Image (cartoon, rainbow, N blue to C red; front, side, top):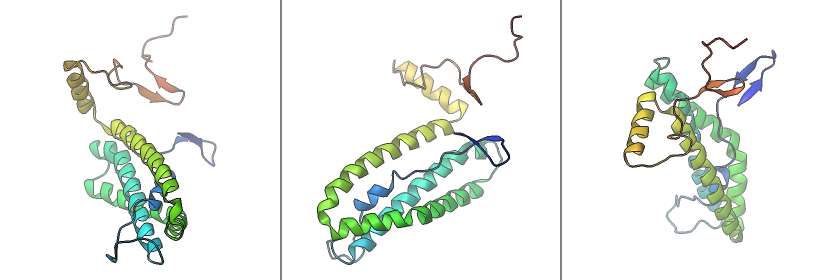
Length: 187
């Protein structure tokens, strides 16, 4: 995403997780005390813990996939990549804590809202998986991309957006530009 900073410069903002993981806090409840139910006073704790784990895992994986090309280029170490992913997971968990707690309280005290959270959780999980697959595809190296393209062409499979392109596109401020800038423009 291209945004304008305070100085008026345009920068490319890294992809960050949205609120798509929050509805899963009404679906993913870990039975922490082993009593077999998540209804009542211990329900918000169990659903809140489950939702926090989902939000943290999603944010950590998104950040790690964002930093894989930097690690591959030698700009950061694996340890720094792991620290950044953990920091992103913690930050995202703190930012979404109120939403997770509200969802956990609602679904544990009003169990009839469970199906609504299940549908919202399925939609949220779909968005999460779409964003993670896109982030994963962006993190692939040129060798991995060529291996995928070769394997897909060997079995006559077309992967839209991946195998139907002849050469990798280069990102520019105006979008994707496949023209060679070294060639002089006709006058």
